[in-house]
Length: 439
Image 1: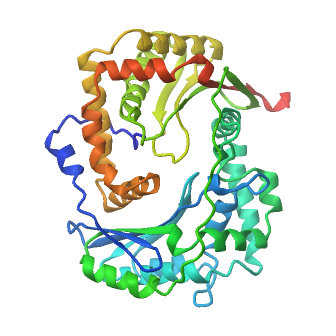
Image 2: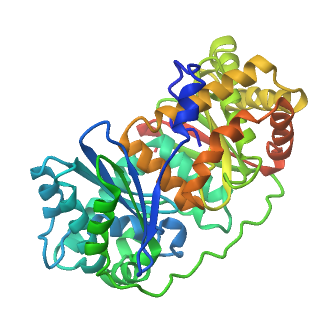
């Protein structure tokens, strides 16, 4: 859940975190069901505009993995009013930058432009919400692009390949077991009809929301949004994801033999998402274990025992479905993953057996608060934060986050460690390096 902890500082500040949690968002819902969240920020003459669709890989079915990500690519291929690939060129010609991304839970399209140009982005996004073509020779060409992206990001990346396999083992039923980018065979077999049906099912105003942050008048921005998006017809509500992950009743393991320089060990434990009262303590627990160079695992594995070159831990609380606490360690040359696993297990057992000290707990709180504050240092970061909370449940939960972190006690950390860091609830992934000649 930590959005990249920039550790140096922190501490600064009682005042900064308090200010950071004040989000005077103006909310409106159009007649077609589109929710609009506006936050004025006049520090610079820029505006970021984001359209969040409540669809990601969790909404796909077996055999159609990667569909949401593929559709994201195809959304740049034009409408009757905009030529293929012209969207990004229009934004760039007007001094802006744009992009998109797909996750397990949502797909987001965004652009950042000057205040006097942002209306162009509003018009373009409304147009492709209703009129994306998804046709022509671009389909097969883009399929090749997506397949190559998968090769570069996953197939040729040992760390990501291991994470993908471990994920598929950790989740037996819930759709998070499928990779966002999709399995290669599924991507190969996706059809234009698949894309069109996915688009018609999920790309509707009543299954989306807009977040805009920056130098604008909320009344003027809302009027422009109503003018453009108000014309897009509401559709039937998409089907809900009703699958539930059954309790894990024993350790699972995933091993990957792949050409790589060093072994890698990962450990994943099932955990609830941010809506659970244990979330704040879980966030701090992961920070205490491996949140920076002074954390327990870094000190023990990297500095003292010198059996790992790097360690990390994270709590993925923003996920809509069942979440996780994950730990990874890059194994030192000439050392064995089993030795690293024993060291991690020892650290886990220690944090489950005795409360953390006041100083260590406060340091973790400072780190988490600092990451939260610096994560919203830009208008894009503020919009992203609003969107993440709205996607999970409602944007107003932002205001509960820092008070929740500050209220965590050492006993809370001890309790969640005992509850969730159980051997029977974990999945171990091991990357076993091979040389090219071995394969």
